Amino acid sequence: MRIIISVLAVVFGAAMASVSAEPLTSSRTRIDTDYQADAAVCKELSKSEIPACMKEAIAKKKAAYASLWKNRDPAAQTRVYYGDLNTNKPKIEKDYQADIAFCRELDKAGSATCQREALERKKFALKSVMTAPKDMKAVCPTCGLVTQVREVDKPRQGSLIGQIGGGVVGGVLGNQVGGGNGRTAATIVGALGGALAGNEIEKRVKTNKYYEVGFRLNNGEEKTITFESENHGFKTGDKIKFENNQLIHQQ
Image: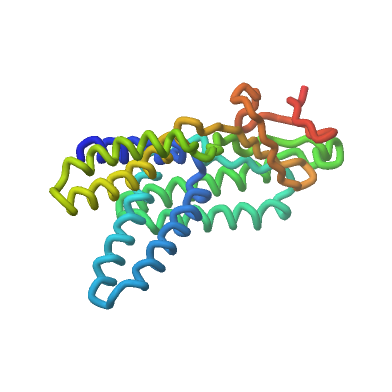
């Protein structure tokens, strides 16, 4: 049992580490989708079981928000706006409201800090577009700024080897529980659980990463380009050009 718990802890820890550098508003969609799935499962239970199930789903949701807030990467929350105020103001307000919606999911202290940070980002964004040169759009429409750089996991399918390996471990553990038919049942359950855990661990180990670089051009377009290597050379705030579907640093 201790081995299984340790395995699940490693898997959960790897999952949380992979999302800590995501923008908070992007992670919010994933958390809410997961919560809706949990809530749907609860509704399929008996009336007496639903309250406890929903309580557990809500607690899981709150814990996910708290973990993301605690492990947030400040650089990943930065947004850079460049160009005309009238063009960017709706986008700035939309991003601000998305930030506030995330803040409301936190506890009182965390929510207050989160909202202050969101307001500071909004003020900085407004100032940046108000003080930007007015003629850059006409001078270089393919120029712009990097607005976001993020690392993304690309999971692979686990192989039969991982399932077999996990199944063997699970079966051995299950066989140590109970006796007679009870031991047989425990072995089957242990094998199934071990196969799932083994498959999940192998997927984590074999996970590839790619890197998304988001940028906004002077003409108002927002685009994203992906790189296979972390050595792409771009960071938030870099001045760039996007020509012939290639992203290059602006000289």
